[in-house]
Image (cartoon, rainbow, N blue to C red):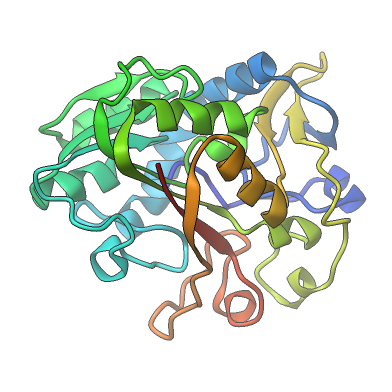
Length: 283
């Protein structure tokens, strides 16, 4: 799950909802237009700097033998959203430390774990892998057409790119006919609410329809973290525009066993509003 929902508020957050990303205390949080190159550069640097803290804070929840779709704790072993994986080639996009790929390999799949962050992939090596790791931008996948049976992304890549249709089209290109791509993102409705786990996170503070990217920038105005908002309808249209067929949209409910708070995710909010959206797409 290559995204840290542990946001710490800055005064700029009062202007609107702050999406789930850790705020650099020296950075200014704002909303402004951001292009593809600036987004990629900012997020590569952010994840390289913050990978150690992220894995320290969340590695135990993600586990070394689980495939978790989001902070609710929905596990692929129970959900089966990818379908049968044994013997199939699977591309994990925004893999982080490749926890999901590790589970896939244990089920007999042949995963390839891809991430933009060199440091995140170093954590994958630290934990131990038996499959290829690839450092690359998900919007320009370094694979031939029809290379994979399946693709997946748990909170990886999609929230951080300026052109999600281009990324989705790349995923479709590398999938074989009949291939499936399943990806999870922060539920778009969360952008209308403050990212707080308590009652203060239940009141709308910004327009759900404001698609202006969330940006953290340094004193010179250079972006150091970028996240892009898409409404639920936008996500559906993006999937279709890239040539996929949307076969399911899953909004995991908060399970009774999960008592943890993770940034803005909590049992209180999870029992009232969705926190994760999972899109199941087929070629």
